[in-house]
Image (cartoon, rainbow, N blue to C red; front, side, top):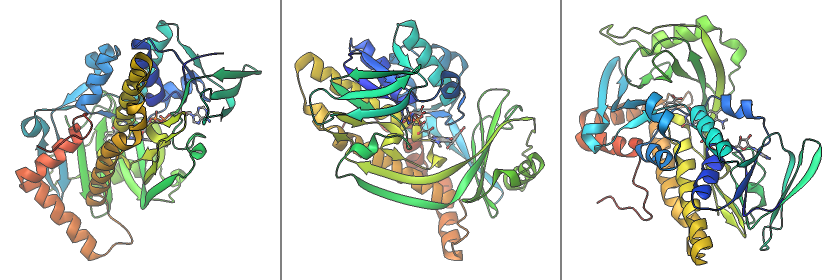
Length: 395
Ligand code: RFL
Ligand code: PHB
């Protein structure tokens, strides 16, 4: 099979790239090792930056998102039993949209298939070859047949556990581990608040989020090596009630049957360069943030925006400058999101190995964000998403 861009991975990064390339007349093939129901049902991120939502609209996949997504003009920080609202709209003129990542993935797959795209699910033994030449290829097994995809370029959008990152020679990794994970639940219960609640409690972090007017999504900080089996539904609800309680009893948590339950490890990870010859990395394949800032999927989408533009410049004007600058340009946003996610994480979680000093610093920072318009604006600006242009400025 011959194509221009071979894309490994049908997550948000790979699928959106395929869609953006298609809109510019550039053909691609997506090779995914899982089956379609698996990638469409995997419960992950839920918050779209304003720019992410706009990108999806411009890509022609915004209709259901705009009909079903929940616009959020602010969020709540809760600590010491008190609630503090950060008003995104007032502070930055922007909001976010709560719309599940698997819904974005469903919309992208539907759009690609409607245009007759070649998406190969359930591909096994995926390998990438000859990236230092002008004719790289991707080989894999599909329906028991060996296939070879001859490409101009290969994009590794194959997530953190993919195969592409390790093909980059001279990889530099910057990494930070955390001593805790998130236990996440999806519950058939109407959200207990109109907005997300990020809560620091002496027993650990809790997050109240949602997917729709009838489905709640919630998370609890648990030790990094925690076993899901040790958390019965009753224990999860009891812990959520304890951590999310307010001093004035103004908050009531609504319970419901659990639809999904899982533990997500946390890490910060940035690997560069994001290019080796004709192989480019995008999204989780190159970087991971802890989920506290809701940046993972948004960063993946920002990467492929850059790549789509760079490939368009290559195919229309034979320009290679945007491709050559890809790592440098992408890294600006990646490091900003990495800092923001680390900052939100350490401010809101309780480090079991930490000291009174660490606790007091985190609480002081929360008080500062809640009380200072400058700090609240900084949080809101990062959360709703910084502008896209390369070399963006704070001014
Ligand atoms: P994805 O979504 O991981 O997609 C990569 C795709 O590549 C496939 N793949 C391969 N295909 C072919 N050959 C191979 N050898 C392959 N190896 C892997 C995989 O099956 C998959 O379909 O990466 P992408 O597109 O870069 O998108 C990034 C986002 O998915 C990610 O940043 C966020 O979901 C991170 N994340 C969360 N972010 C948040 O902001 N909030 C969250 O609540 C949140 N929860 C999560 C998460 C990530 C998780 N992972 C990766 C363990 C929960 C989980 C469980
Ligand atoms: C989610 O709804 O899954 C979610 C929301 C906000 C985050 C992380 C996850 O920071």
